[in-house]
Each structure stands twice: as C-alpha cells, then as structure tokens.
Length: 286
Image 1: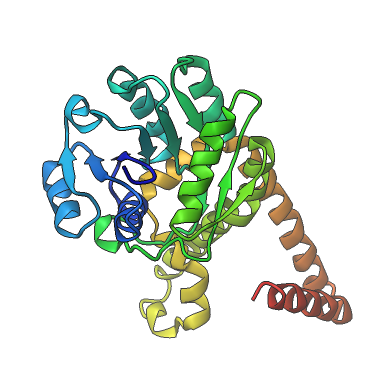
Image 2: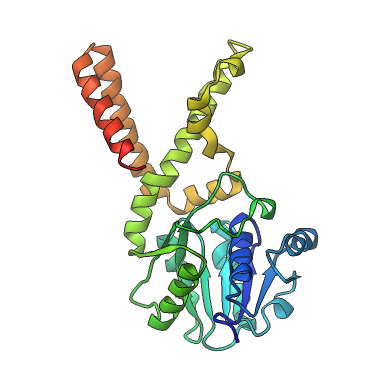
C-alpha cells in the first residue's frame, strides 16, 4: 500500500485537480478518486490525469477511501463532509482547502462523529483561473499550506495531512483558525475586493469614455488580475469571513483617507515618505 491509500477528492476543479495530479505524479496514493455532480467534468478530469476514476455516487466513490479532500467552494464544504460520513470507515480523515476557517470548523466540529477526523487546511497557492483544465501537478511546489488545528483535532490526523502536503511540495504552517481568518482577510480577501472595486471604477468610466481599454497598462492588469476568480467562490468567502473582511475594509479605507488628505493638503514630503516605505516593504516580499 502506498502512503495515503485510496484518496477521494470531492470537487475536482483547479485546486482539487492539482492535488490529484500531484499525488499521482509522486505516486503517493494507491488510487485517486474524483467525486462531483457533473459526469462530463469528471471524465475530463480523468482524461487530464487528475483522477483515475470519477463518480457522482458517494457510495461508490468513497468506498475504502481513508483520506477525503473536499475542494469545493467554502459554502459547500460542510454539506459535502456531512454527506460523506455514511460511506467512510472508522478512523477516516477528512480535510479541506477552504480559505476561511473559523465559521467552517465550528460547523463541522458540531456534527463530526468521533469515529471520523477532520483537519482544516488552506493551500496558499491558488490562481485566478478555475476549472480542472487549469490544474497542474506543480502548483503547490515551494508554496505554503496552512493547517488550522483546534483542541479537538486528532494528533495523528494532523500528522497525516501535514505529510500529504509536504509530499506534494508544500511547506506546512500551523496557526489557529482565528489568526488565519484575520490574516487572510488582509492578505487575500481584501486584495480581491480592491481589484473588484477598480474594475467597477473602470466600468463607470466607460460610460464617459468609450475607449478606456486602450489606456490600460500592465499596472492595472496586474492589480486587477485576481478579479478573474470564481464569483461564486468569492461570494462564499465574503459570507463566511464577513467580520474580518469588514475590519480589513475599514483599515484600508482609513489608509486611503489619509492619502487623500495628504494629497489634498499638498503634503508632498509626507507622501514621499509613504511611497518610500511602501516600496521598501513590497521589495522585501520578493
């Protein structure tokens, strides 16, 4: 038997497909099974090498699966986990890839049977594209994957999920769910909403000037690239992490208000200091 036995992936999109490809390429699983609602998409995932078999029936798809990865939009994760329970053997491990953790884990731990283990996970390696057509086995190499254990998390299950992510090339970080959601609201969720807002401003400007696209350069394209992400996925993220996202938006508005005041009052030295500091901090991220 290979390291992780039979692995079931619920939701074989870009992230789920990339996990399947990576597990298969590195020969870490006896078999990778895909589960979803659309037989056509499952067949496509099989052709692309993301899975070996695909099922819409959980009974068939989860038979003998000791490890289940739920890679659906955040809003569906608890639903899919609950649906999987009847078909899993005692000691099975379930994990996810959701970018929101507090609300999700609270829901899951309320109905999680003692015979099944859950470990919250979030690979910080996504692209703005979605769908299994954009999956690739190298997506997680040299990336970070955050695991968010709670006092209820089984130690062995945590170890197994950590080994899985390391096995497909990721660095594993441990953090509690509260810290995760606060940090990700600022580093991931807020940037997406800023990109959406910039596109909205451009759309409004199109009403005045019909040729605005001719004046778009690399800066605007780079800044708004992430707005191409799945709208349903991002709606669910905002719903699940509402409190922290609102806090992040308030912090951002406070900063933009400061910059507006600086420019309005022609405090150019102060503006220069802000620009220098921003450049220094951004350069340190490279």
